[in-house]
Image: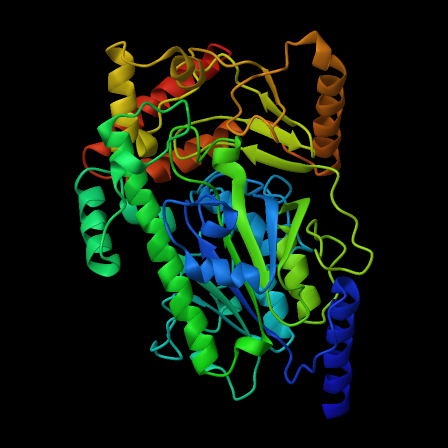
Length: 498
């Protein structure tokens, strides 16, 4: 058994060294695997070009490993994204594409062959855990960190909330789940409290007047204060990352641990979270550890579902044929020609949007084009920033760009952007005859992907009614009338063919 383990460890080392060109270095133990998974945060770190704040810990992680400049999620909202991440499968393929779905009578089960990554690693001898990563938890505790999976799963796939409970020498798979952008809350008093915490922790909070906003957001005090608080949330996230990395060093685990840092989608803002523009889908991705190239920046397109396959390869395990993610450091790895994303129902708001991105263009298909760009949604409409945007719009205080991108009464059926140069996706090229050939190509790419991955059609009415009943039951206080109003509006639009 000891010899077989040694052979396996050597195979892991040879695989990674051959894939990356790394110099040979001994691996004493099968590598641990640690993921940082952060809520509601874009690539606003120093290593990605942020200048208003310092993020030394994530920056050092990137300098010691590989940073991916063009990493994207396949879903711009928490639960579909995390369902895809933990299976290495598109959420549309496994039926987990509607946010917080399947909690009613019509529960969702994974396809028979598909298994969550922790279950596979646990069977291979890994201690699997999910929590805050700072230690001190009861080793047997089941106070797990955020999972948010849109399917029924067995809690036994996790051994606990921390790696402290593992057997001596046992490798671990740890997910450190952090609130990230959610630290700033919905705005107002929660923003003020976070700024006060930042002053106490870092000596000063981010100054709202110094913030640069995307061009379609007005430089309004409410929006500036919110974005400043968001950047402070980035600082708190970086600080937490530093504490976990320091713990790995103290415990002598750093050299034998592959560390992955990513977020589950972009900033929660009007055109960010829930949408397929860069603000919603572009995320940071950094990988560091034994066999991973140091100080490398990669420009190829990658998807967050690739992390499941990468982690299996790190553990010396085969990537199942059913898994749609790819090992990013495999021998002979061929970069993706395109990456895909989907947005479906979020809470009570029905929608269906798909996108395909190549190195040169982003194509978005709106399946409900007669609905407004910024549909009613109780969760987002509860945010101070969205309330302020709607108030400015009602008062005629929004400039033409914001009116067109945020408050158009209907959307184009097709959108096409030259995203490498059009950072904020401002100019839709779909109607430009000069781009007709590209439009046709992207349209075909998306259709082919939908067919190949069994992307489902519109949500069955029975599922809507089942999930909405649960969502109404769970909504609280003043939000309940808004949710009921929005559900009625969605059904009215659907009946009208919108």
